[in-house]
Length: 83
Image (cartoon, rainbow, N blue to C red; front, side):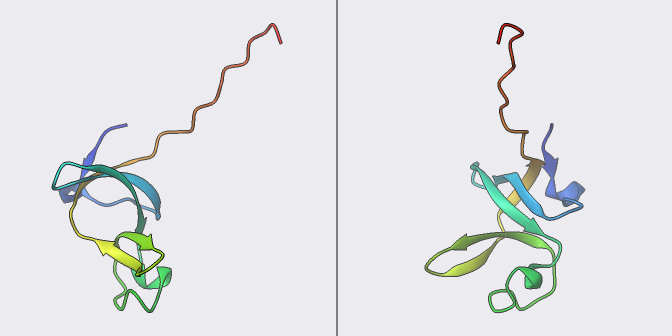
């Protein structure tokens, strides 16, 4: 897997991704092709974007994403033949 700069495109489908921010942090954030479908009260426009949720303030959009990549597959222990 490699980083995809925002200038080269956005994910083709919604979900959780690793993002890199303009201040150098790497975080897991969600992406939607239609933020309004996530929450029509917090997102007034029908547009794609990165978002997060806070239990006190609700959904909010992330504007400082510079690159993204899919999450790696979860760890799965290898089975030994001796089991």
